[in-house]
Length: 287
Length: 314
Image (cartoon, rainbow over the protein chains, first blue to last red):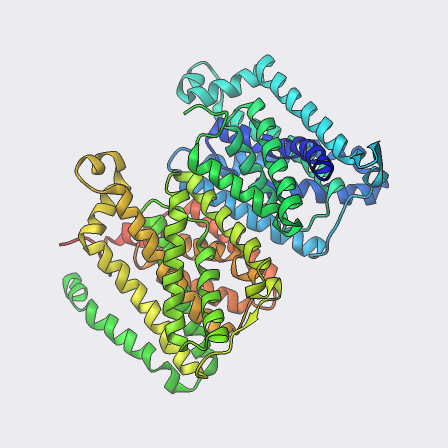
């Protein structure tokens, strides 16, 4: 049991991080029925933005959030407004492929600017731990990830439930034509929704950068994590997203504990494929 | 006039294939190399086109079969001394078997779920192969062909898969299976009511695609000599195929031919600047989807009403 205490605690905390990585994608999936294949790369863009801003202004990663989050809003707004909105509605393939194109462009742009070296956002939190027992420590950075993750998801939930923008977004997602008849500019609303989704991705990017190393090519890896969380948790459900994050992170870390660290990601994928095959609508989703 | 051109198309095509057949005799190494890459990418892209353009299966996991085909060739010739072309065929067979296994999971998914499901499978395979002692972990394998083969032989093999893939898809589309596929693409529910076996047709296409992709990858890796999981199972493969098919025209037989030519030309010209070439590929793909969603050949066909290889019966 002592061997498993640490992976379980880490898995639960990491679940919060996974949930915030996924929440933006889940939101867009729910609203526009769009799978943003560039989600992971846009999130990594957030990490690199924070890196540049941090070194340029000499501030810590958490402070860069003040700039990264608004910048990411505009990035999301433009990607949706100028690219994805144009191909919405016809068939499923064009938006998927445009997003794929954005992903390739971003990856290679980052590669050109930042070289393929491993980067991380330096913070003294990364090495601190809170000792609980002789065999169990809580890494401060994981705790921070989980807390911020839960906080961001709660804020998004309130935004969607309580504000006019949130109601308009939900209306546009439920019935686009009716929403337009009620005076909602749905295309503009989609762009704003993507902006909001990218704000959460920006936060996720900074947290990921503080917790792990990242490269220009790590985007797809996080896209799969995000997709896994969305699939396990079910679409458009905030609770489901949190639960999905927990399940995926726990299966990865427990898998690594049992089969060796090389199989950490592999175990996550296997759990994901099993869930997909058995319940394609997700554990918490309805058909 | 138009009819005369149309009727003589088989002779023109045969002459073209014949000319491509004597390329190794011309002695131009660059031309040989260029045509070989063209055929290999044509075969891979035509298979993605068969899936995405005709069967409604957007697969983002073609690299599973690329890696499988390459690794089977490497393992067979290095460990068991299997005759190299037999190894290539076995690569196709193993890829089809892998496809059959994958179908247990991913054929329950639809649309986007299917796309990501195939991708996750490839990622899982990547990790599996990089942790597998049998395939030398992530260090990769050098392929030692048995017997030693010349560039010319590799060229003819790629010519066969390249031309063969076009002929195969043409044949499929003219068959009952193809008729069902096109009916499915237009309206799945109606075609199912009319007696098209949707599930089985899709599965056949997926397995055919896996087989051809696997064998083509085998030839490609004989040429490349070295195989490594991080490259063989990388999403980059599918990126390239998507690009080729989109540029050329998805759901047309000629599309992948034009697309593969443009792709090989672009990637050879920009070979020194790898990330720039990928960047340009991505940008061109987006532009094409926004401006001419049917690609080069699709748009031309719409404007001119002329198809060289029409799957329709006249």
